[in-house]
Image (cartoon, rainbow, N blue to C red; front, top):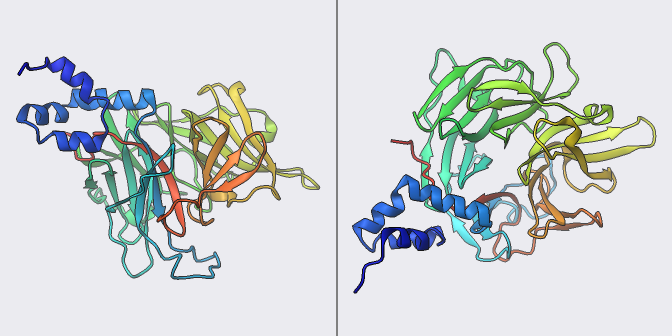
Length: 376
């Protein structure tokens, strides 16, 4: 039987799903080596990203938040995690969680997703893990041990990719103290960087949003308690903070403003606008061209009566496949994420998935072979 050239085999394998490739590693030692090779991993990742193939949603089960009434405690007490195909919302599959939920009611949450890796924070143990649900690989990060650092105070989190060093990084910061720590998957270690020049309030969503090589938050300049007037980023390559230009006055003066995810590669910011009398609106702004203040666009502008999620914790998950809707999630304060039709301004909750948890939040990811283990 003729043997196919390696480049032909590579071209065939790079278009296949991760689950199939995992099985194919057993075909031969040469196939196993090929599929594990970092160059092939990047080829497979590039194909998935450019074709939008292998895109999934993680449905992260939630217990009912303490400030939310529930008529059925048993139904709302599901801490399991599942994945579904993004396009069809089918092929539900339960995933093994990186952390085991204890009887205290404390759960873990996903605070970042990039290139198939999910960053997970466990509330009970104050621990962090990087997890690839497609390959079932998981790495628990070492605890912070630098100086007299108290890990429990580093509540502001972010996860992203350093394009300069080809490295995945986790950021932990204090709020008012502003001390910042960065974890590198390549070195499997933490280090302290220059303090954050802005103050982040704990009352709002404080998981960083990754776009254009930087993680982003909303904060205040020191000694200016204005509840989030400044959008700023941390460039993961140089590990330096920078301010993000903002548009006209009305958008700058949004109250309850927070960075709320990324749509189509564009940074999103949520907030409420009021004139103090008869106008109260919830706004979703998108920066179409990074760093250009004129490119900020009001993608959504609804009255507070029309808004159906907890605005303080709402984040954008993804555009629909047709681009006419946006999937929004508020971290489990509402029972389910919701599709918002951009033209009709109508809502449809994501609750028609048989077997899914009674209450869940959603995160988008692409199935990849990228390893969650420290780089060798």
